[in-house]
View 1: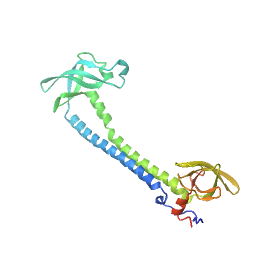
View 2: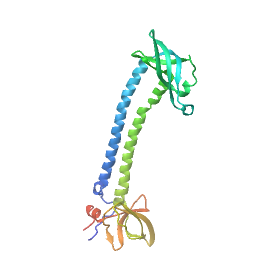
View 3: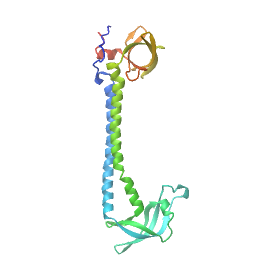
View 4: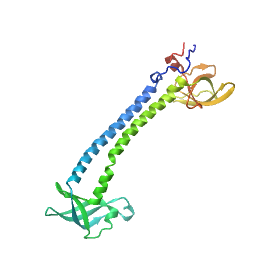
Length: 254
């Protein structure tokens, strides 16, 4: 076996690195699944906002009279909701509703007979909403599309970052890294997963220590007890061991 390694920069493509395309495809599938989930959320949000916009456009504000309140225990009211029972007149028709949602902290300050502002949809006059609660909820939900957009940008950014990380860890060492003969500090363990081990090499009579990684189940290119590796350009304390399969794919073996 003879080595025929070109000088840097060497022509190395991501598709030549065994397993790299599979990892990238896996990340792409996960990203698409996340995007599909965001799409479903956007569809739901779209229907919700259409309904909310229609309600806000149609609703009329009327005064209701508080009959009773139903509240959670005192120690659980922070940020919780309560229910109001109210009487109100809309379009000359009297209504009595017992499940009008509002903030518990607001409701606990109301007494029997207090005036409560309600938003009533003429298309559903029997389903009023407490005005302050409804407007606060609508303003909060208004940020949801921005959240979905940020989520989509985040998914794209994560995929891009993973692709760049893959290129930096798998391709750049082979394309630009210094090729050295590493001496492992101990015999390489046999494992099914990726192995990371301490090693060293000499350059101009200076001993340089690195941590190296070798792909699972692969036979490194050896020179006695030494193994061939490419030093990662951006992280000189790391090296990528070159196995015989990879060297053959790259045309470095003769």
